[in-house]
Image 1 (cartoon, one colour):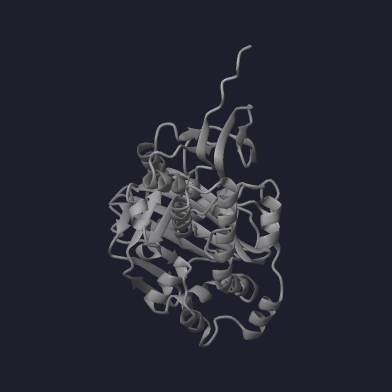
Image 2 (tube, rainbow, N blue to C red; image 1 turned 90 degrees about the vertical axis):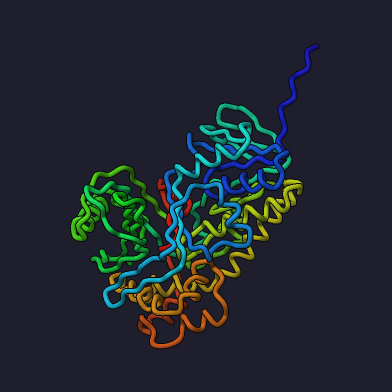
Length: 408
């Protein structure tokens, strides 16, 4: 009688090779190269089609070292924000990472046996993952990092964007990022353009909307980017595009969501675990924090890792409640065309406060300062917004992408 060959068993299998999953795999590799780690991604490349950006002050301890292997664009001179009644330059060091460089670095840094792309998972359980073709990967610990699951357990609005990477016909002479240019027609949303000077003749220009619905009209947004570039004198050829639809969470029931998406014994990370900034949909500092936490606890059995990350998600949810409240006022208290006034006022505040806001680490004093003074929205509408409810964050036949842009 011939015995069946036993399947190889990994220490940790990570399902989803986006930002969260990729950083966890890298953190594990750096912590213990002897660990057998699997990074299983449905697409052919890691990281999707994204660009992640962050302030130097966003990163937790150990974060800079974790991100060191990636080729990044960095602007030590800081960045600018442009509003109808306010313009400001801040000197926070700003960095950006493309998914192309994310994929390249992970393939260079991780063991050859770790990365499995073009593998779509059919089912997960505490002991491993089964692919759509029936192939099975066994593991002591399974981490699901496949992205946010649209759910009516949450309420809020949407951040919709289109980005274009272009090569300009002449040097553009922009020396720093423009994180927000809200001097544009608002189109029934809080709209701004986000621009990164990637080289002397290369720009990344993104058109972003905080809107009430998840609709993304590619034709309309592309035409608006054309008009914006023409207005500021940038002419050139497109090199690449990206689009995204991200949830802006203003409230909800995290425990209910966890019950709905939980697979017993399987840990969740990234946007799937709701570990993100609820107002900006910003994931990078949270993904770094989670990756370091997993690496520190890499020897835990799967069930304990699942409990650890679920408790971590609850802590993040608790500490980001203030931003959900601000989101509720942004969507509920301000007319869409005037939502920009909230950020226009915000960018008059001290730079350290702004940095802590984006990192999700606002102090009690910061929160008082943000809310103090003459409000940019009618007080009665703000009270009504806080007492009311936003539409549920559920979608039909639409893909939610794990956070792309760093700010906005």
